[in-house]
Length: 312
Image 1 (cartoon, rainbow, N blue to C red):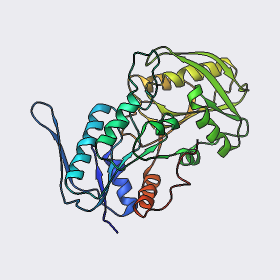
Image 2: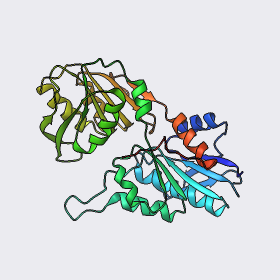
Image 3: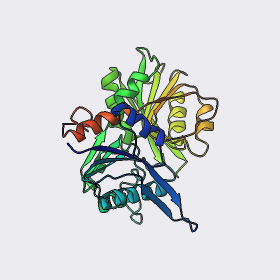
Image 4: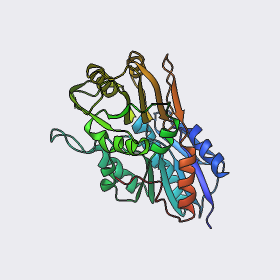
């Protein structure tokens, strides 16, 4: 069997170390620096010839830097003779740009998918993409894992009067996955995005009066969607005892300030991205290392990932 080799980019080295600990493999030494003019430079610190290589790099902010670094690492490994090359991307940037809204925009997700294919990757592993339909834009095999089971096991007690809430139409299928595991009803907030930070809510579908909402989403970026959803839920008479969970906690701009102002009892995310959450609201981070390590182990041994992947 080929040697299993892990290589960590700079986006989330702590997660790569945790994955390595699960597998009993230390990440391969690598250097990442910049030339005086700002160009990125990477170098692999040991031979990977004939190895089964797994590059661990979420393309979190700054997405362009982390994406290009991943491409450089992939090229370095390919030129150094790696036999098989898999990108482990716990968070995939540009995934929300999966269609044109006005007709004069790029489909950013397709651009990223094409870059990854051109970079010589044999396979991509992602966790809770913004839309499962994104698999259709990838020309290399995409393994779409879900962290929902891990997040459900880490939630605070909800009680029998809880309701799972999708903060927009795009999160409906995700909410249904939570609802099946928790045996709870689902409600939907009808949202319209105005800008990258501002959204407006038209209506709430489902019975939320007097119930404890569990608001679920794939990511929290600025907190605008969660803020608008919770405001609408409170106006609809929900209990002021709200729990929020998302796979990817980016928490950029004034996200934490927004969330701290809301009656949120618990906030649970994974460690898919390295993010600072300093503030008064306690955030519980669930480790993805067991999930990613198991996926890597099975891929390395050519075994099925059937019970790990998302079946939309």
